[in-house]
Length: 233
Image 1 (cartoon, rainbow, N blue to C red):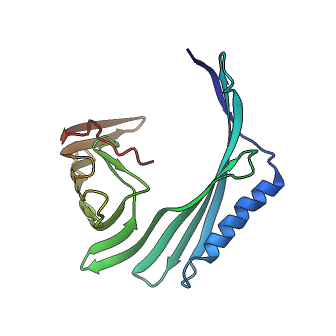
Image 2 (cartoon, one colour):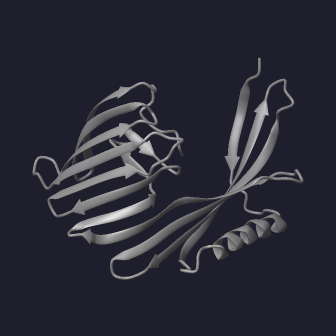
Image 3 (cartoon, rainbow, N blue to C red):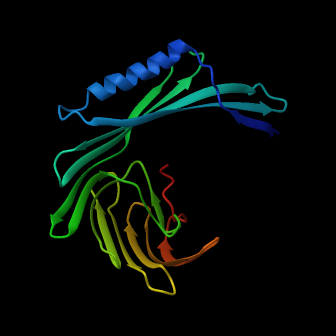
C-alpha cells in the first residue's frame, strides 16, 4: 500500500534564468499575435511554485517546479465599448528535454455599456458563480453572451452560452434587490445547465453588522450529475 506522508509547497525565488527567458519569450510572441487593435498592457504577474512529494516504500518521491504567467490586456475603444483579455501561460520547469507549455485565454470579452437603453452587454469567456459557488461555479471554458442592468436599488443579469455542439446549452439569470433595511441585499438566482444535467434556483440574503456579516443562502436543484459545480477551474 502506498501512502503519501509528506507534501509541501515552497516559493522558489531563484530559478534558472534560461527557463524564465523561455517563458517570457512565449508570452511576448503570443502578445504580438493579438489582432491589430493592439490591446493595452495593464499589468502582469508570475507565480512560481515548488511541490515536493514523499511516498513510503516507493520510487515516486520527487520535486517539481511549475510557473503561471498572467498578462492583463485592455483597450477602451470608445466611451461605450471596451475589450479585456487575461492571457495565461503555464510552464513546467522539468528536467526533461520536451516540456509542455500551455498558452490560453483565461478570460476575455467585449463589453458595451448602454447597448440597448440602460442595458449593458458583454460577450466572451466569462466567469459566473451564484450562491457562494453552490448553485453554479463556471470558469475558464465557458463562453456567454450576457446582459446586465444595475441601479441604486435593483440589479438584474441574464446570460446564455454560445452554441456548442460538444456541450449543452446553459442559461442563467440573477435578480438582486438592494438597500432593503433588514437585509442589505436579497439575491435570486436560476440556472438551467444541460451540460451538467441540472437546473435549480437559490435565494441569498446578506447583512453587515460592523465586525460581523450575516449571510443566508437557500437553494434547490434537480441534478442528474450529482455535482452542483462545474470543476472547470
